[in-house]
Image (cartoon, rainbow, N blue to C red; front, side):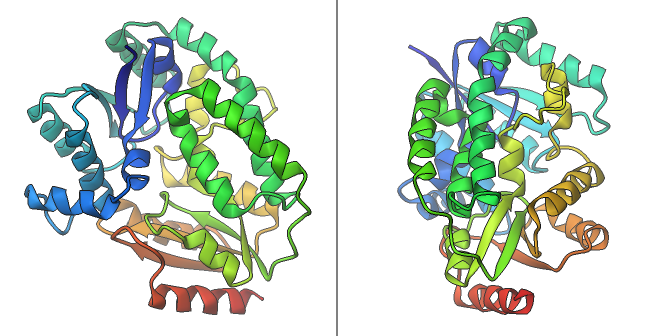
Length: 331
């Protein structure tokens, strides 16, 4: 039986696959659960504070309800500041917890050391993970095709783009099956007519939104999302300029876990490439990344609307009014 290994955010999935493990992104399992709000309530009933990120509460409750997942890889540097305490709670519940760090300075040797340590903990090697990385090249190239069909051809919606790219953190546990479904989707999307010209071309920055219909709401208001910043980073899309020659470089180029300035340079490139009119910066309540909004506003010379989300659910009336006003101003 394939060993399920939970991950608290995107990690070098190639190492898990090389070890014969089934990666399980706890965030994806929480948000696609039949009752994600119920999971949050369960965690609060177990004693978690109201003033704590709903993502942490949701993935904790999901993990407790799925004891077959005996191992969790927790990112202790480069992601949520609450992960350390989550590790302790999961260890208390009998899980094996493996820490993984994304070194703040993006030092290649430090990243290589982390890859080696993770591979050793799972019973594989970085060389075997490199073979897996090469085997995933076709899948990642097709994800890049999907992204291009969003911003260049207008045949894939922003919401569809978000779902496919955010799911690439663990490939739904089965890269081959995921790739097959992706190929079928791309074949269908190619037959679509281009979408009508929108009032505004937008990028969505920040952690994946807990709002269940943000993209659909923007589309209903006449805007189109042609850039999903962090989901695109999760997908590790090939650049085509020769810097994807190793696992170290792939995860060094990944912007999410490092400093905001490195991340901002990538955003600037995508603003120019995709011809964006404005940005929606999503922030999660009680998350330290809210402070980075100040840096992004200073460094990105484009109209930006900042949204804060807390609980799972659709866009509320107040937020919809703010989005509507923002789109109208851009138009």
